[in-house]
Image (cartoon, rainbow over all chains, first blue to last red; front, side):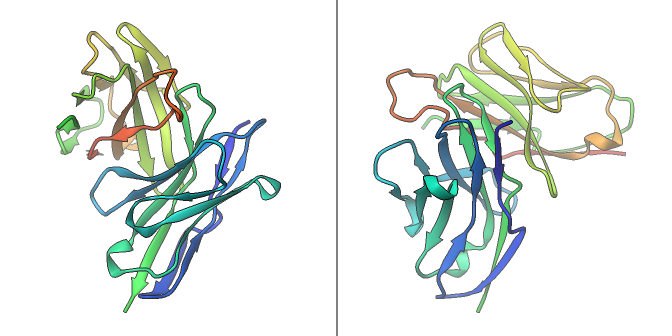
Amino acid sequence: AQSVTQPDIHITVSEGASLELRCNYSYGATPYLFWYVQSPGQGLQLLLKYFSGDTLVQGIKGFEAEFKRSQSSFNLRKPSVHWSDAAEYFCAGGRGNEKLTFGTGTRLTIIP
Amino acid sequence: DAEITQSPRHKITETGRQVTLACHQTWNHNNMFWYRQDLGHGLRLIHYSYGVQDTNKGEVSDGYSVSRSNTEDLPLTLESAASSQTSVYFCASSEPDQEREVRDEQFFGPGTRLTVL
């Protein structure tokens, strides 16, 4: 069965520190991969997406993600976090059939 | 600007009542989806539609129904609300253009928080 796993339920980082959120996928073939961000009380906003080609993908708000086929991973990174990055982050995968499978999310807390 | 809206944003109801949550998109997307979001489960797909008159069950469809009479709207109905259906509900849409580089990208509404007492 297709699945997306986010191993970390909650991560706390200091403002200005680097960030890496983990995402692993299990699909029969390489899926389309997405990272979404959800601010409190809001809907989900797309940060970035991967289909094929360059394995390092740049997104909005200074985020990037790297696709690693050998590790079945699509980790999200940011070199220096800001207090406004505090939110819930979701990784999702699709296989071109229009449906997405979401991970359970990682809640990011930023401390001053 | 095109958008996707949900109403109401907050709803409190009683067990056994029928409840309908509205979702309206002006993207003119053919695909629409309903998810519920619960702590520890992320987003789980309830129902989805690939076009007018088309509806499909997702992984947690029991107790829910949808109908698609036009492109813009996909209302979600809880036939007889249960406390287990207390959740935040999100509607999303996407465009199945075969020529786009990346399909499956979904656009989300702001959510409806439903409490069943």
